[in-house]
Length: 325
Ligand code: MTE
Image 1: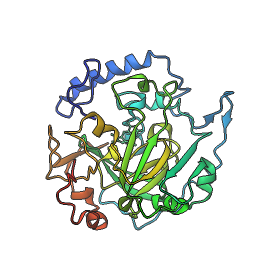
Image 2: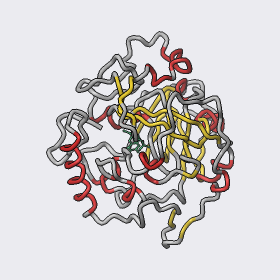
Image 3: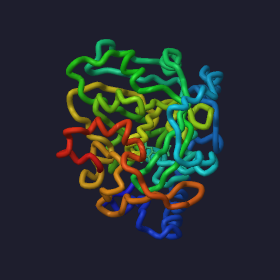
Image 4: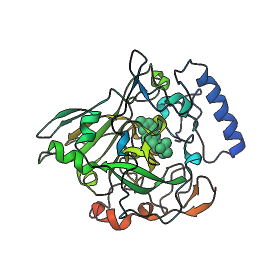
């Protein structure tokens, strides 16, 4: 993510920076972060560990791969797994893309998701109790980062609407606010006071109830590896990727518009809506095209990332809002 006026120690990725220079910066940050004694047990550790160090079994394993929902098709090939496996944005673990080893410190069990606020049935779900209440399916979705790279991946999960139905939104609920875990012992960047931790995101209730809004539990036919936001994240494919919050612990229905993490850091560059639009540039770079991970090909970006038919109606009458930042 790209921000202006950052403290001197903060070296964000810059789309405008030649890749060789940027890669050098990344390895510098990576080396610094690696020095801070991270608890990863291996590159792609699969099992969670309890406090006593014992592996906690994942009771949902038998539900993968889930049946693919063919209503969600791609206009491009699925990105090969190895191109995305260690290319992530998960700032809790560092500002580089290569955080999979460090993120492996994140244990998906035990894990609870609290749903509260303007709902009839506020509930604190144990993650596997929540999973037992919903049907898993696989969807092929495009993903367009605000930094102008993109991928297309098979997510497993369930519609966000299914979670809303479990708790019963009240009539005055207008927004849904999401919050990530807060544990600096696991996620070292949460020690950095510059960032407004924990990571927060939000959307309108109407957006949350849209069929495309998907709560993700897995990727490539297996439970989410830590770097993708284990055990539960969002996928909102018509919005820039920063809206797809990872490792959710809290969902609050509210009548107040949430201020998201990047909006709090750089309100002139990152907004609440963040719908993909090739005709509205980021203040410091073009959004007209995107670099496809794996091939490096540059392709034109599509309005609402190609999902206009499904979501354009959500924004009727909202023309005065900054819908595309
Ligand atoms: N969620 C949390 N908690 N922390 C983050 O840093 N980064 C966001 C989003 N969700 C982020 C997050 C950004 S900028 C993007 S592009 C996507 O996650 C990246 O998802 P991926 O790593 O699965 O590609």
